[in-house]
Image (cartoon, rainbow, N blue to C red; front, top):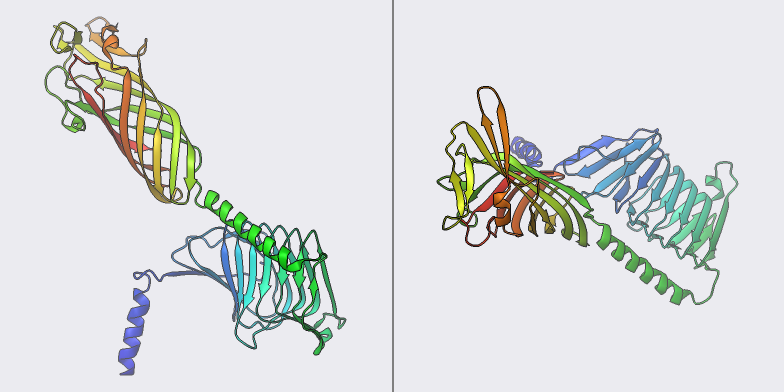
Length: 444
């Protein structure tokens, strides 16, 4: 029976990654003495036998290192830091990040907590759990919060709250015997509407007060509600605007094209003189600016250009304006190659869904104007035994449909993907053969 249980446990362990319970872990060097959280990062800290950082999921890299500092930024996974007793550590939370201490902590040499820019630091646990350090420093600023539901114990303590921030401690215990040189000391200071609540305060085991508030102003309860409300509103406002931000971008799309007699039929091409080969001569470039920018969705508008060069399968091609409908016609030469060049100015209107840092897809309408000029129209090249003659034919330019309206669908991972684009308006005016281009390729 025991062997069966061991076998089942081993199989379950092997299956964890496949079931989505994979975990990345790395040891933390004693040289790391500072942890910084940025961009909505979240970290839980617990006591452990060794210094180790773990993240649920298969992370390629757990934070970035610079000297003695480890920086963690926004992640969709849960990160946990295990600290062995006796460490000297500093934690700095910024940009709406969240730091949580959980459980009982043996004595640390020095613990420095600095919260700013609407970030939060909390400590919680069961009855009897305590956060202990010979030197304890807590500083709050810029609408940030430090809150504990279990006692903190220290030999030397420094607590500072400024700029509408709050430090709210359930209980504080200063012990002179814990101070590095046996001289206990503590200081509570605040300014600019900062607030500190030291909670149930004892010194060397002797109760000094049940609750002490260092506020620097009256109407504490009112200002506390104002501070909390302003902090939450600012946090939500900034998070909605910046969580998975969709930036202004340059779209570069290039690939193959052809045309068909109906909308979306370009993959089959057309028959006759108007037939072109499916060739790699479509290029599009546009700048897109977010108009609506929220998590998981963006609406963008932009400005761009579209270049196309269609290669005819018939050697010599002209445009016959006397035919009904007007269309491309074959010339007499068999030693020629012919192509059609078009240009368009477009105003993309694009909706994007997903995560711009990972997988996302978009649907775009590309209204615009077809542009006629010296760089558009028919081009023919004649290969003679003694020379090569190139000829420009602008006769077809006046028959280009002035209006352009394509629809494009794209799927991308980070900055690269694939697109398919179909014209909803014919390339030529009424009275001409209906030709609807279709394009597909790579988009960056």
